[in-house]
Image (cartoon, rainbow, N blue to C red):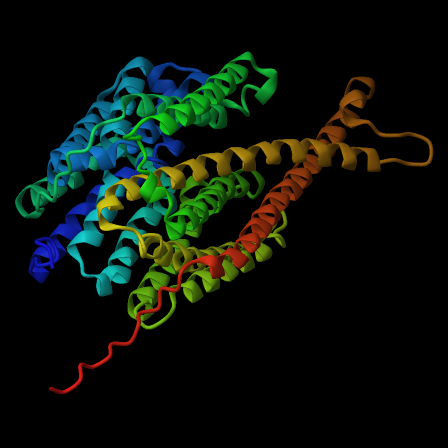
Length: 508
């Protein structure tokens, strides 16, 4: 038993509380600022296209700096990196709240991303290291709840703070949590082992360039019309060049940036693939539902937050169940059940209409929260079951990065398909509005009829657009359902994680 697993139970609880505070403030900031963007536009005097950099800068910086987390923790000690990350993230959050221009905000958001990148992977590896193997499912249940609470609570909390206080409190809320976490970590967190491993600068730079370009493509592709934009073409060219350089360099260097031994582990490979898809489904669903409820059904920001909040209770229930039964069951069964529950929730969402009752949204949200909890929490432990402990911090960084990339790609794909399918369905519906003599083409007819008739046509076009958007949302939900079902066969490829019964020693 190492020094960390020998800690007394009270110390473990304090460390768990501290690292979860750090995790929560980091994951909250990936979504909490979204609803405040319209208010920031007025205060910072920016356009819609410019204000999007407030989100993009944070995502790109966080993605890039997630990569060297394992090396930094090994080189300087996990406690040192955790303290620097929490302190830096807290200070940069305060600066974001004080920003008076777009330039300042983007710089401070980059700082947030740089300091916050290490918080999620190091919190995961810390909880795994301070607990014995038999307690890993419980530890991952707590960690999973903290990671999943951000996308669930973020929009409603951000809406409440923005509506009743100011958008600046979206960032100021991190201050008391960050200070409390920093003090607890400073007193109770062990330093951890240090590893003298060379840093592959070329590998880091090429892989960072690849990830940065991919994130920029996903974040700006829809507004720039994808391949029709010179900006997107440049990002693609840079990304392909960076991938080629990274592969060639990795094959020739004796100390590659990502440890080859880690990447040969089958459970880690499958775990990364699973979490990529889970990230796509989790954040894409949470990104689609607020505009669906606000734009089509007329709910306010606060109402949306209240209706989506029960999804978190589903995850809480799943966390409680998993922590109690994970040591008794093969975790593959939990993952399988979670996938089926998630697919069932998406199937029910395919039955949504423009006037879907709020209770139906709550019901599907709770079911999906249960399903994602049963998938995410056991998967967080299963991924590292057969992995050497020396790779744990590095693997946790990669796990967190892949989850964030899946979320970014999932949201981009969902909204791109939403826009295109809305336009397609609108065209089909307009073509279907005919009579025996006149084909009614709404966009053309408005300038050719009397003002009264034009108003009727505009009303008809408004209703057609609503119906077309509804169908497009349902198409997105259906696609995500099939993606989740496609993962089911892969569950059986994971290594068996059911604890083996202890054989009593023979009597002397």
